[in-house]
Length: 87
Image (cartoon, rainbow, N blue to C red; front, side, top):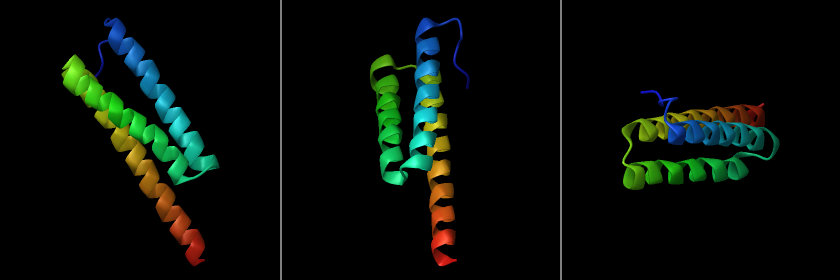
């Protein structure tokens, strides 16, 4: 499901989610998983807000997709760190 670009709330959410993804990836690369987790948790909070307060299925789905992306990056980071430690 995609956000409606004609909806001002969706546009703001899209910008905020893009910012969360960029900050998460940067922290993951430069400071590690614990610091990157801050942005995953913020996005989880946004997901809860969109679900409980906005009750907007498109916004909820967008947040979920971003959280899923962040968790996949976290797993890849852990896999790489484990492989490096074993080498």
